[in-house]
Image (cartoon, rainbow, N blue to C red; front, side, top):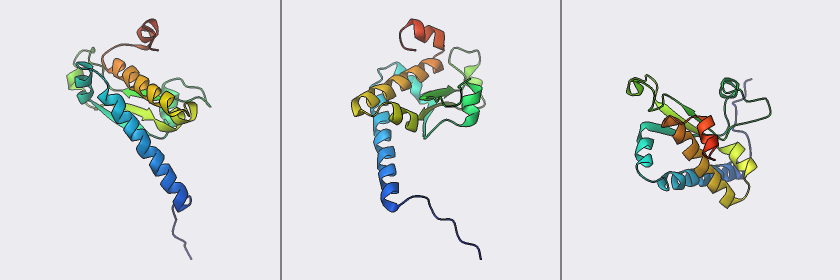
Length: 139
């Protein structure tokens, strides 16, 4: 006899998890709304995706050691690269909810870090690398 797979967790736990995910989406929406023009216009060229955590492949490709994580990741062709408008894959900013929530349990600090992460990844889309972001104090 085969038993059908059930969702993991209690209904109450699942509801709490869904509520946290929805609250995080609202933080991301506020972060996006707070970005001034002309930078907000550049976000139209980028899909913003919320993931729980980065994949092992994303960690490996970005030289992240086991046990460490990422808050966000830009994947795509920056506007500064030649023929950026011919890119086969869509530009994408991934925000990783669980590492952000774990490291910033205070709601105000979490909101500030989500905004900072969105801006950091948007800067990559605009062609600004990590070294330059460090020089600007936004690394």
